[in-house]
Amino acid sequence: MFALMVPLIVYLCDVPVTSGKTVSGLFKSDAARENNGQYITRFLFHGKNALMVYKLDDVSTAMQKEAKLLLFQTLEGSDNLSCLEYLSGAQLSVTLSSEEHNQTIPHQPSPRRWHVIYADRYTCQEGDIDGVLKDVRFQITLFNPDAAGNPLDHFSAEEAGLHSFYFLLILAYFVAACIYSQPLWQALRKGGPMHTVLKVLSSALLLQAGSALFNYIHLARYSRDGIGCPLMGSLAEFCDMVSQIQMLYMLLSLCMGWTLNRSRKSQVKPLQWDTSPASTALALGGVATQGALLVWEQFEDAEHHSYHAHRSMAGVLLITLRIILALLLASILYQIITTERSALKRDFYMSFAKGCFLWFLCHPILVLLSVVFSEHQREKVITIGVILCQSISVVVLYRLFLSRSLYWEVSSLSSVTLPLTMSRGPRNRY
Image 1: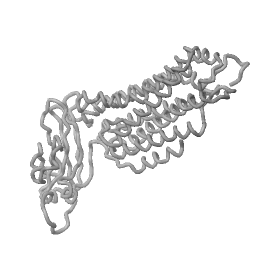
Image 2 (image 1 turned 90 degrees about the horizontal axis):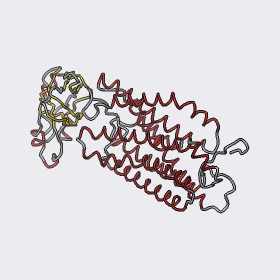
Image 3 (image 1 turned 90 degrees about the vertical axis):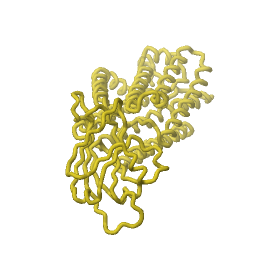
Image 4 (image 1 turned 60 degrees about the horizontal axis):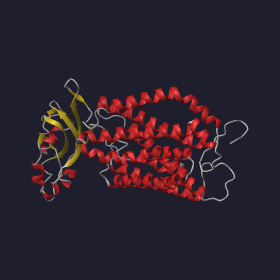
């Protein structure tokens, strides 16, 4: 597992960051010529007092180049247009003629995404340009109206409310930790066959809590300056990826272990976490594939969201992989349940299956359901829904492996088909 974390650490150091809605950089005429306009950023404005503020370091150079900012509500269909036709189709044009300027965005009844493009007199000019084109340093800040109607909110419409959600999530984790940390720690100290599973579940839950905390820190600062703390956003994504990898490895290892051990003729000791080469290879193969797709997806979409609507190829492949893994686990558990005679054991496997399917299928299902929501709601529906569903999945698995009433009854049957067993008294050791 450590080897699989190395590329994720490299990702934190190398991934390009496009942070916040206070955007700084250089207006480059060369970049604008190559792409029919230099793409700056995008933002989902809403309300009637939305605002864009720009600041320039060199106004004279901007005026000499006849620089301007063009705002488009959509960029689709621009490939078939000439440069002049494309730029003339902007819904709003702002001439860069002063050191600082406040531009009010036209009111729209519902949130709309606006794309900010830089262009100047050289953007559509053909042939060579005499002289060196000097770049202009800029800062652009984008605002939505707050609750009082004042343009002070840095959050885009699809991000509004996530800050409060992460705060409530952290509060829930804190309350749960105060209530359940001591019993869980005692269960971990006892060791026994279920020790490894509980450690993985605890580690995954801590990583989820860490991801929520880092996202909250990032968004708390983002709400003040529109930039946030990109390192915190990257750490949040890193924690989520490691949590996904740990859970996948555990679930695949357990299911493959049950299947392989059921085919063994000699079963003289209680079955624990299977570490045979076959089950390990299958689990590591699934983990490596998912890890590669997660890193690829983050490089394609560098904004700080742990869960995306998956419009990229990496995202589609990741959704497909999760569906395939869910079908694989369903096939394995179906074979076990249909051949199991004990009702208690079937209940155990059914509860385990519910936790598995909730973990793997919540993301694909929410991505599918998000299409019925408005554009500004889709990201929040996916993010909040996946976090809550996967947290519930961990709770289901915790209850399954910590429930003494059910687990001890199953263990008392002297079964060797379960991965974990616990004796009722001190006379039998694990």
